[in-house]
Image 1 (tube, rainbow, N blue to C red):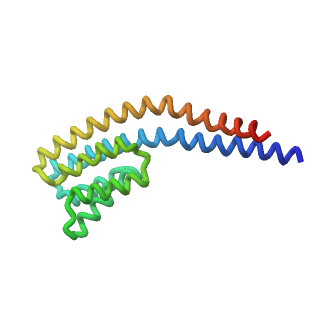
Image 2 (image 1 turned 120 degrees about the vertical axis):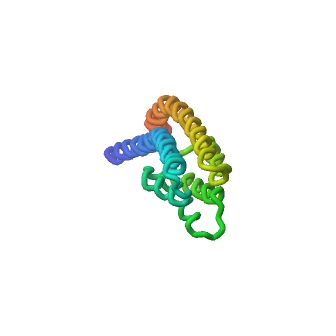
Image 3 (image 1 turned 30 degrees about the vertical axis):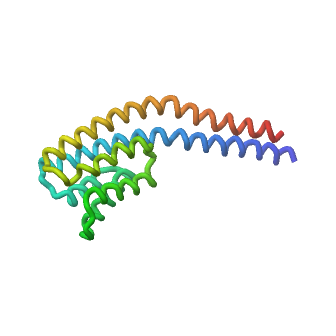
Length: 174
């Protein structure tokens, strides 16, 4: 009977520990996704300004360039524009953002900044879009720095907190 209790204690602490470690990984995934978004927007900017690629094709190429789950934003937006059902670039971008929201680890603040891209995408000439995309890249760079600071503290709290919470639950059950 003692081995059963010991096994239960170990599994409880391990379960809460894994939960905490998963929460800690969200911080590093968010940081990586912000960096990938910044790089992908830089790629999109080059496609629009220097290559003069149509927006639909530029988003498709950017989706191939970007890493998952960020590439979902560009794939979904590109597909909606290719359907030729009267979808505007703004609507396609917002639909892509919804896909990224569900599959990514970005905060609401991150998504709010990305929503501002929708209002400028495909509306003005290539030079103006390039200026706006560079501005968004600068915002993402600031968010990256903020996310790196949050990651340092947040990962420790989640990592240790999961195991500590597991130990507290075990002590309460004893």
